[in-house]
Length: 237
Image (cartoon, rainbow, N blue to C red; front, side):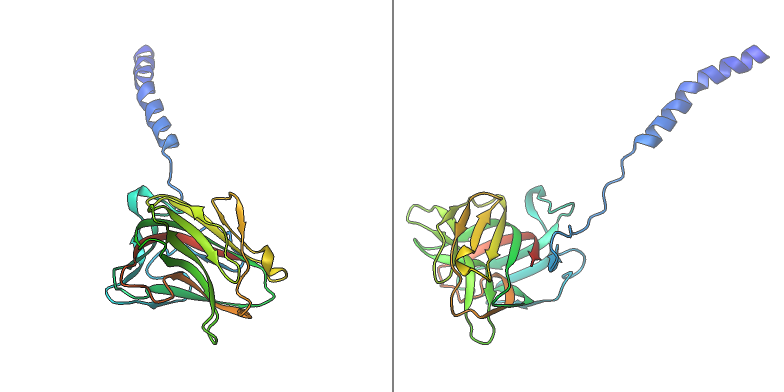
């Protein structure tokens, strides 16, 4: 009888070991959350609505969707939710804005993960991707998408002195850094994916920055259109 019990136990061992092994190696997916890289603001567009307070401006047939599922398996941090802004032809300015309330002496960095799905512009035309805006004067500095006569797209920071162009490709994910130096404005720069820093000088008319704006803040031409996704945005001061 003892030998029979030992035989049955040995026969069951592979099953018991296999059950225990599978149970111990099942991986639990990481909880989706917005990385806290900014000490001023972090926005990952998670959950219903925004994580911070934003105000939308929607032009004719434009779309601002903060509950958008990022396309083509793109994930921001550990998340697949983001912001989608669609500006159709003759659609006017369509954007969303956040109150940053920075003074003229503040030095800060704005980072944005983005992908331009499509853009339509005439040769040498441009459309805004991101801007900082002064409410009382209507002045702003921005990062715009521009195109040359050979349909090559680029990013450029505008101010009293404009940066050089940074080439990019539609349908590809990038992280742009927009650095404003409040002490020495000429040391401000734009940077794509941690690469070369392209200097520019913000407009001297700007004595403060009230709003951070994503999308087209300025009125667009009837020949301009854009479909852009943002994975997350963060601000460091």
